[in-house]
Length: 300
Image (cartoon, rainbow, N blue to C red):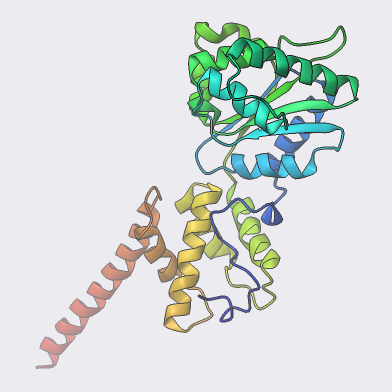
């Protein structure tokens, strides 16, 4: 690939949520502070929502790495679970060695006892659920019942929901009003501003080991910001394609036409401004050609 060509130690714009590339911009930094504060206060439910590609999974993994040692963490990346599957998944994440023949009532009781023993040992338990907008109504109710477990002073388990805006729509339904009222803290991730996109691009290049002349100028970064609408995933896709094009051409200078081609080749990007830019170039060339023909005829 283009690693050696640009003197990079690793790929800077992959789609895998790598916490080494975590960029503490305002939205993600604020969300992390909300999460850590809410967990410390022992809130039952905490919710983080954001559009597709805004970095929810990366934030979830960053929280996993940053959470204090007195927490026992259960992480469920797959939310397509019915209530029975949720209980078994939680038991496995908590390290419980159980008989697979247990009925659901016995399983629930054993989980309750295990949570109580963890609390008595000074451990706080937090359940992190990614893609929470996919949770069924019955599974949401099962989650609510888990947070009923408490001592006189604190909850036995806290739940953090990471989801797309559809999660907010689902929680607005009267069927889950009891759960909705238990959400103590919530945060909505926004897209990056144009200035944040420019910083984000250069930050990822620096983490990846780049130390040469600036690859993406502010003008180029702002073009990417507009085309991507500030969505980190789309910024990564565009920058990766731009570097591929430059590498394929054997040039180490990023040009506006590289960005135009990347946007044109990428779904869900806004390319109107770039099409207008390209149309301007084509129109300018047409004017020059027409003027040349006119002068040639006058010469004849």
